[in-house]
Length: 395
Ligand code: AMP
Image 1: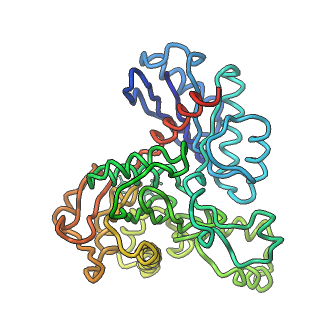
Image 2: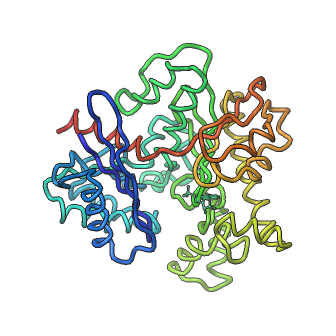
């Protein structure tokens, strides 16, 4: 069974092709296109690339194309994409203006090209379905809550992979199995004592911090939309709602203007005054740019605040995990994030941390109460597994 996973950004198309055969999971190919202007052409090019590389003789033979969709109004989990799902995705456009439109475009183009191949979505919100209710509620009037204003949480595929891998690295196969089966039995898989408590830091172009107890998320730093939580590359992160009202009145901004500014001109971009990639911001910081230094300071500060929240709510932690572009590659930032936390049992090993180059590795003192790991993100594998399970159980 071959499953293609398409990862659609506002100007990029990345793909990974998996084959599930005789109980084995094979990653057959990966690739993609940057600076995409014509998605249809990018899809055709990628399918042709897979054909000429001998990885996929005929795209029509795919068991499914899977999508790591961000959110849809009123639905989550793993779903076959039909008109209802497309409508729900479209209704989610205002909540995820940077994410949903490219997915809608890409999904429609795949449907045109491969009308007989099932298209299946795993929503990024799916991992938080079992979070305790206080972690999902905002203190808003009831009618707001009923209209869908609630904490959802994102980067579910990435944090779920961390839940599985960290449990395996800590020899807790029972917890790894519970995490793997989560979307099948909602966490009913029995696990042994003691509890396994993990703080997962997905730090990339978009970042979020999750607390995980025994393989199940207890919440995420992102709330209703992916514009919340820690500062994102261009997106604002947490902000007092009255600051939005103030800015609209004082700066005379329309709803459309404020949406654009919160989504594309805020976050690290807003703080640093023009850079959204931490590599550029670190370079500027080294050159003495004070705004760049402030952007990094705020980023680290907010990450630590969320780590602290999960540490408290989990009553401690057995593992702290770094994943995604920044989490995997920026040792200096990991060092700053872990500074002066020995009171909590978090002790980074500077030499191991510096030596880690994006591969799975332990970067803390293994004798400390909290083990510290880098786990490379593998969101596509999580999506592919769920799509496979969906096909086996629902089609
Ligand atoms: P992601 O969203 O996981 O693709 O991560 C993207 C961000 O991670 C970029 O904005 C960079 O700041 C950072 N990043 C990605 N790759 C690298 C790398 N090889 N070295 C350093 N930083 C990286």
